[in-house]
Length: 476
Image (cartoon, rainbow, N blue to C red):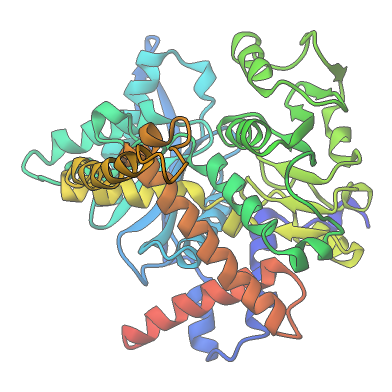
């Protein structure tokens, strides 16, 4: 197909939405209400920098307010535009519904190259952008709660939270106005790793179901699987690291903006990450084969392909050459609607972004709850839990001292069993539970309905059904 036939990111989201609702019995008016974005605010503001006024353009889109507050990241990139922000806001609506996070969908963006400004300048720009949004209640703990996205992180969220607190000095819940903050500014343990950790938990759940693995022509466990990762940013790095270090997967390929690295015996993810941080890319990395046109590694033979950066990297131009039997969309919209059709016809199994990318918003939900409750998770129950475990250990030690029984405690058992769960363990537990339940809701539709042949359609059917139920409860 010619490249002109490639749908835009927003068109891809709409096409996939339409494919799902065609299999639902929704009133036309409700279907349209769920499809469209409620509102998009465009702001153009000036900041005096380097002796002159620079004007920046930013967006905040609210897709659905079937639940409030609405939730969604803010990205900093020169490619930001209204259609992209609205498409991402729609995805957020369905993502939150799928994983049962009680939010509507929103998204924001600022058209800026964050690398072109020093830290002090970026803080001035961020605070002014936040000011423009805050005064219109587009950052508010009860109405609209941003989070980090591409080009933003803990630092930018801390600036935004502080700006909100300065403008709302009596709001006791001000820290809940954004998520993804540093720990010392009201953040939560495990938020930075959350999206990558969610990808790991999603794959673990997929590999628990032999019937699902068979659809991708896979068997066994994650141990030894060959993985190619596109984008070693926050999401790709954590997913690749956890899969290789904890599950025994072999990361054979890494694709970055300046090329790719390949090693069939497995790459050292941690070493490559340090190289990228120090050198700005993978070029020159000494311990792997460097490929200048890194995108060709997407087409290499592997078991799992993890696109973890930008949207549209798997498209009509390369979809028919993708050999991975299983793709998990760690980024938002990495597979276009056109490519999705080609891959489904080939029998490729795609674990969709709506689900696979939901670790971030899930842990953001936990952080929001922590900020509203004003207490760290585990603070009330951890020592009580340890005291109860101590009773069991004391009894076991008494019994193990009985020579007639002939048994003893395993090494390290006491230490591991006695330790109560801290915040990080509780966050990971909650995320794991969320990813398992959401996957099971998708696979039930995937397997039980004869007209549903892929996980993406199943995910849309589950999430749209939940959004529709919320609107009906409101009387629409």
